[in-house]
Amino acid sequence: MKFSKELKAGVITLLAIVGFVVLFQFMKGKSLFTTDNIFYAKYDNVEGLAQSSAVSINGLKVGQVDKITPLTTKDGKINFVVKITVDNKFEFSKNSSLEIFEPGLMSGKEMRVNLAYGGPTAKDGDTLKGAFKLGTLGSLSSQVGPVKDQLQVVLHRVDSLMANANLLVDAQNRAEIKALLSNLNKTVGALQATAGSVNNLVGHNDPKLQKVLDDASLTMQSGKVTLDKYGNLAQSIDTKQLNSTIANLDATVGKLNQVIGGIDRGEGSLGKIMKDDQLYNNLNSASTNLNSLIEDMKANPKRYINFSVFGKNNKD
Image (cartoon, rainbow, N blue to C red; front, side, top):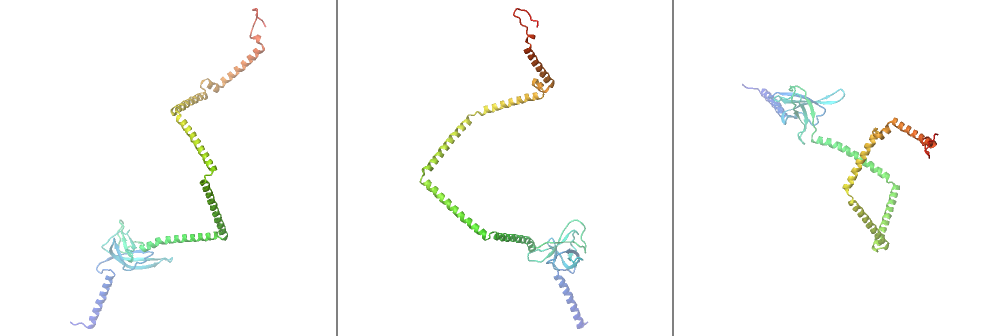
């Protein structure tokens, strides 16, 4: 059986097309002999992620990114829906998330399934929660950005401070500062002259200075003698006797307080006198009657005293 040249060419072309498709799918990481599950996730940013990027679970490649579709909302916001394929041999919870990450400093973006345990199992066509993790350079840039902004603020403040300092130190202020420094130099010169005079005075042993030093020495000796006397007096004090005297005085004061308290409560004669108004009135009345009696005795002594030289009673 012979085949025509056209048939042979068609068969060869068909086999070439099939081989090209198989090779293309193989280069994309897809397998023609397994059935994969499809999952979706929505992101605001897919920077660096490309179709055919690897999808892994715990570091093992289990699928790849199949398609990235941009969606525009009514308010003009753009989101991206990422479609991935995962080998159906791997099952995980629907609460798991799909995270875009950068595995290395020089490598491109990939995706991984962050496993979550519990809940229903993810099915083919489910939409999972999306997550995005900054790479090393992105993380460093996010940390350097605030530092740069703070540094710019500090530099701006330093520039303002220098400008204010320049305004402060104008021509008049510079002249005043120069005069101040000149006066300070004169003061230092005067102090040096004074120090030289003192050195000359001490070096020539001036009699006046010597007399002042001698008087100071005598004063210090007198003070030392006085301190020694007070020190001996303090040592001669009997501390135990002083403490005993203080204790006795404290006991006496306590008893006196008890007596005063008893008087205040109306106890004893003094207390009754102070607290009993009737007794006070009786004493006051008796004192008044006694005074009247004494006055009457002074006015009429014969009424109370009868005296006769010859023994005769007066009947007055």
